[in-house]
Each structure stands twice: as C-alpha cells, then as structure tokens.
View 1 (cartoon, rainbow, N blue to C red):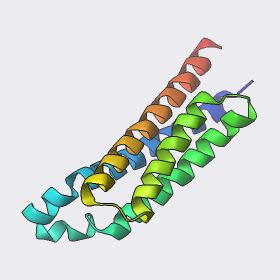
View 2: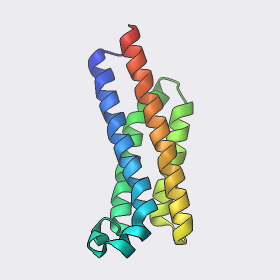
View 3: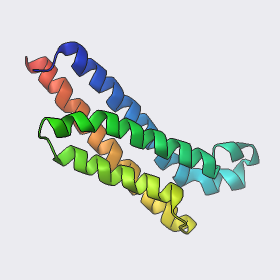
Length: 129
C-alpha cells in the first residue's frame, strides 16, 4: 500500500513531467515562429534547449514510471517510454525541421498523457483509501 506522502510525491513528479514534456512540445512547435518573430528568443529556440528539455523529461519519466514497472503495471510505462524515446530521438537524431517538430510534439503528448493518467491514478488511490 502506498502512503499518502509517497502518493503526493509521485503526483508532484508527474506534474514536473507534464511541465517538461509540454515544454519540449511547445519548444519544438513554436521554434520557427519565434526565430522569425522574435530574434531575442533564440536561446529558447536553440537546439541545446531541446536537448536539455528532452533529457530532463526522459529522466523524470524514468523516475516516475520505473516504480510502476516494479509493481507489475506496464501500460503507462510503455506509453511514457515511447514518448521519451521520441522526444530524445528528435533531440539527437538528424531530422528535417518538420520531422523533428512532429516527433517531438507526438512524443511530448504521449508523455503528458502518461503523466496525467499516472497522477490521476495516484490521486484516486489516495482519496479512495
């Protein structure tokens, strides 16, 4: 049985995961617009920013979903692994701009979905017991 403190901690990490995954998706989706419209936004739109966000999002996903694997839950960790893999691949594999945007947005959306479902489960579990 999971304690309420552990459940709260997991929900916080899920929120961090949602924020990082969303930042990856937003970063990639608006990079070209920012580069054209706001030259000062270059540091946010840089490739280095994408790499840092991707690695952080993947690290948080690993920290959140590995314990689920240990408890025999496989669906959400699989979705999170796919999303993490897509976001990280888009950061490190040479792709066209359109491909990078597509892969990052879909990967980020999968991560956000997995974290929100995970947080909801922890919230439901916590309130039900």
